[in-house]
Length: 217
Image (cartoon, rainbow, N blue to C red; front, side, top):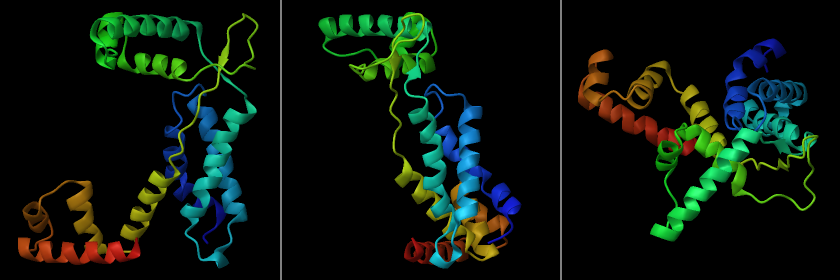
């Protein structure tokens, strides 16, 4: 493995990818990022190369564990009074809609009706989606604290990491083809022009690359 500083710098993208999944859950991004960096540092210090495991595959659950620890150690996540008031309005409108039309309003309809952003409507729905615990604590002003669950997205990120690692193993010329076709959304004709190839050559090479990548994945 490379030196620790280099390993940390090259895996900051993984930390950000994990942190972004927890935004809007009641903890500031800076705190999430700090916890993620701590997890990355632990992964770097404890990584055992003899296990023949990709570092990012090993580091992912360690980083996620440190971020989730924020929610566990902090107990319940506080919900602001303004958000709770908005949640009450959302519930009222949805109750009325269910009585009249048999269904809830969409997020867009709620946002338009209450003259707020769709993001705020989503936050309000999240804070009322799950019931209060019978042992829920209250803050100094008597406001209940809600437990906001965190989705388990390990499988999704692991798949993305696997694809990225498979692309990283390709020869430079093959990486260019994949980058142009699947990351820059170029057609085979456009890719052929950029790489000074024919469309047929790009098509054949692309099929071969994808076949090899599937074997790795």
